Length: 192
Length: 138
Figure 1 (cartoon, each protein chain N blue to C red):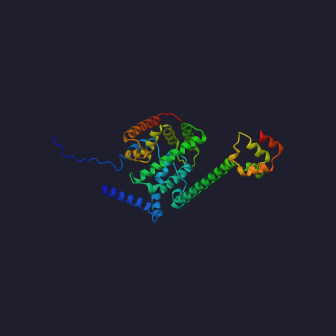
Figure 2: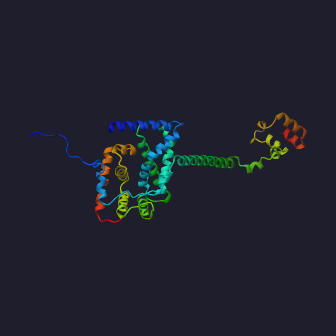
Figure 3: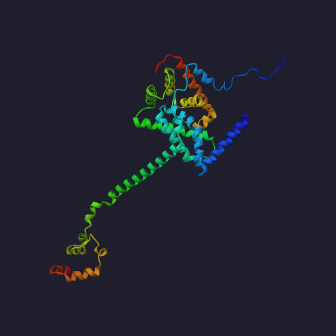
């Protein structure tokens, strides 16, 4: 059952890629692609940049890049992995540009972004959730990304490995460390 | 003792293991706390992305053309210097008698390279003064 499901998913993806490369079917195929991935990619970006407006901007840029780059997509990885990789790179580049623009260190910028969540009308978190975001923001870059992709997006280590270009062994170690730090800090009464 | 049944009789709820890590955090009361504006995903359509794609392309073309024009403007001003064109007055290119004379009898400038010798010789003969005669005789 699961084998036939995975085969049909593979066939669906191959057909979608083929249609995306066909100028006559491209528009329709892109709508299907957008419907399938927009929410997942949105939340992947949102967990990195935290703010809705920035996420909206990056999300549109991601799909523009997908639209322009689909002809060069060789199918060496899953379509979703390729899209997540573009989204990850766009989000990281956005943060780097923001750091340069405001002359912030990455640490100060992450603190500012987390503090801004308190006033964000599109953040519905209580103190514990704010605390979790603050803890995640203080994690080293790789631990933070691995934790977000594994815990929130529920991606497999193999997929994360393809997105980040890091071995699964290193990712597992990073995830384990991140998890330990988060549990330890959540259990403590430390405020941020 | 012989095992009666190797089959695992205990069952777990669907997705139990995949959600196991999440449950640890849920014990702290954590849920998805990022929300999006109403109908945001419905409004995010292909036409919206395509319009942005076109406007991004348009902005890039305009920026490239503007940058090229600015480059050409500065290049023109730096290398051609139109304000110095006045110096190339036609009258200044005409040799005066003194210039021709000075050129012919000066070692600094090779006047032969610049003028038609036969014509200048005729010119000198026709305009020769007494002092010129003395110079030639020397």
